Length: 76
Image 1 (cartoon, rainbow, N blue to C red):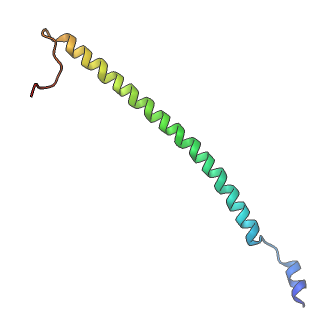
Image 2 (cartoon, helix red, strand yellow):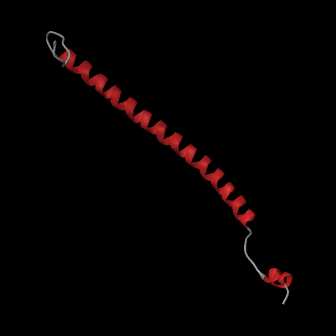
Image 3 (cartoon, rainbow, N blue to C red):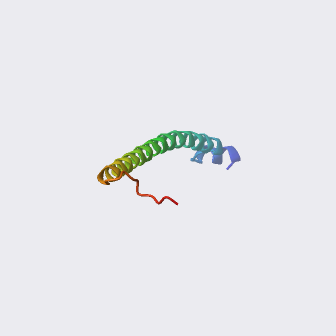
């Protein structure tokens, strides 16, 4: 059996083919993870803004409920 005859019957992927596939998969995963990361960041910002709005309303409510208007913090 010659070397060329053995090569013709071997099946599988070459290193170049595997490298190309890995590059494509990396690009796809990078774009997907970037989009998901941005969405998570926007969600966290919205939750933080909601919490700040609730704190602001609570402080206003406390200040208005006091006869001499004061905020819940010490003078010193």
